[in-house]
Length: 148
Image (cartoon, rainbow, N blue to C red; front, side, top):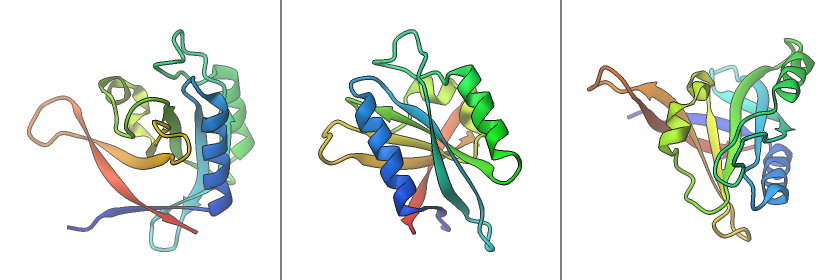
């Protein structure tokens, strides 16, 4: 089976992890911008932290609307939105039912940074697709993350 692959620049990886660690014990969130490589693989070139305005930021995330719009306009067509990021301060880096229920499932990739052990963050990236066996619901398909 061909595995989905996504690439991220090393400094972007560091910025993303740093933002998630700074937000502890709250969930952090942000956006990854980039492009498609010559062979069609998404490449994350920039990380933009976005404030979490969720009613309960210890257990969920909601992107600050004005910051979200500002980030999308700043990309100005030079780069595409290739991913959304949020952290799980106390749980594994797998999508929760709440994550699967968000409208962000149409974003090319959904990154989850687990900080169960802050000294050893664990990161997974997923694509959300409609389940084949059901008329509703989503399944998470893992990306292989490649560091550039």
